[in-house]
Length: 254
Image 1 (cartoon, rainbow, N blue to C red):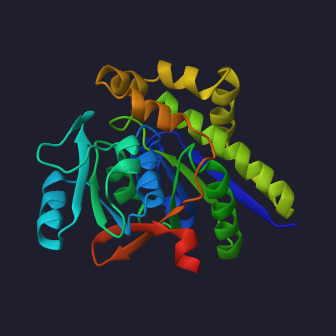
Image 2 (cartoon, rainbow, N blue to C red; image 1 turned 90 degrees about the vertical axis):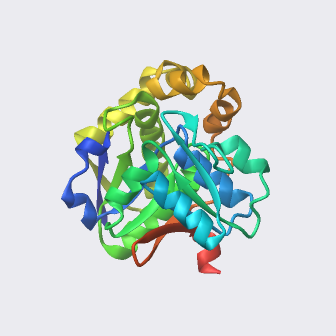
């Protein structure tokens, strides 16, 4: 029986160089992860992620991309879209490229980009992302690292809850595939967060990110971020020179 080691970085501060040798599932559930999944669900061709606002503006202008982003929960001035999964579902993005810049998520993606393979996880796509991530690690004979973006480098409750939920889905898939998992203490901590709350809504309402989102009028986004296993999109990182972009893993394999 194959054994796969799994670790969880509960914030980007816990992300170590060792994670570069693993398959990474990056989580910024409120909101970047959920926004990227929603953009691909709505027919977006590619989602480019950048750490800096000016780079997003440059790509938008030079490549005629749509721009999406926020800083400290507020939409960036002059951008086409907010970092909003609800808006991503309705904005005309079909066959278009979108460049996304956010306070936390896109910066974490940039830090983790050298790993074996990088997928974007959220509650929206937890089940399918867990399966794809597990299969990718199995094929690469590597471990898995779940990377929580956190909030400005610090632990945040909503990402930890999502990580714990994704871990539960990985365990279910591993059982079906006959794979043994060796989980770190950080994984056990993330699962303990899930057990500590009656549901995701309660955890998200208590989290710092959830409070910021609701405090800035983001109730519709909040509701989308809570949806569980409603999407089959698995955003998969590609590199083009120094640019990072995501396509749907299923589309890639067709």
